[in-house]
Image 1: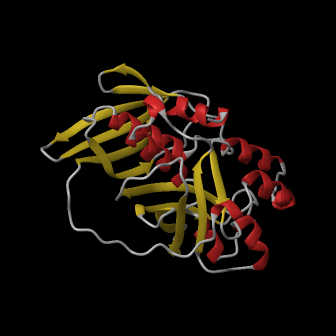
Image 2 (image 1 turned 45 degrees about the vertical axis):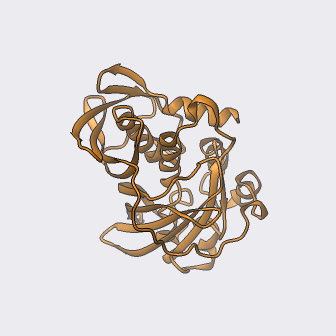
Image 3 (image 1 turned 180 degrees about the vertical axis):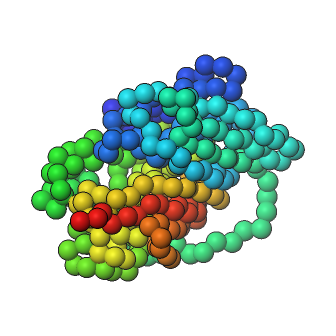
Amino acid sequence: MSEALQGLLDLLDLERIEENIFRGDSHPAVIPRVFGGQVAAQALVAAGRTVPADRGAHSLHAYFLRPGDPGAPIVYTVDRIRDGRSFTTRRVVAVQHGQPIFHLSASFQAYEEGLEHQQPMPDAPDPETLPTADEMLPRHAHLFSDPSVVDRLLEARAAVDLRYVSEPPFVAAEKGPSEPRSQVWFRTNGKLGGAIDEPLLHVCLATYVSDMTLLDSILLAHGRGGWAVGDVVGASLDHAMWFHRPFRADEWLLYDQQSPSSSGGRGLGQASIYTADGKLAISVVQEGLVRVPRS
């Protein structure tokens, strides 16, 4: 296991300070606010720790309310909304400096058999044939408004092996607008095992990664490079995920992302996450703030 991955696991190992109250720290962020995927993953950890172990997370719905302060701890308060025979529902509020910064509702279900179908996995190259972030990002440092962003991106994503199938927005922007679709492969930068190897952890790790690239397809549609290039101001507004089938976050997952619409300073991203053998594991939808800076 890499040192960076161990650091991420430590980040997700929240401190229980009361029966339904947990506290988490933050990693330094690329931008001066807490990374949204971190808050979502920690909130799901908090919810999951109040749920029987035989019930797995099947969905979450969340709102990003205020920018988080990376220099301060985050307190997560869990409301035990319902404990039914098949489903368990939890509501989590993340608080900093006396104000809510994030709100999550999550539902958990005891396993049961049911009808089975899925949309087929789209074509994608073998992830092992694609360049790593360490190989790809330094080649494009000249495109960023601040070249030091490359080092900060590499540090922030060191726990995850994330490989772009197609050109990321900051590269594709030089060619103008393109199809609003983006694909990446990802997995944790190291294998999980032992006492920590539980389904909830894999779900929380996928939640963490899901906020990294989902708005890329919006930028591609308009030939914009994103915040790092300086031609867009963006932030996550809300986030929803449905967990359909078991998966492992330390094995390759294909994140197939597209955008059906953008308007009113907001853009919508939709995505499907597949296991390497073609099983649809997760569906994701996110709306984000996408503003063009005034000159």
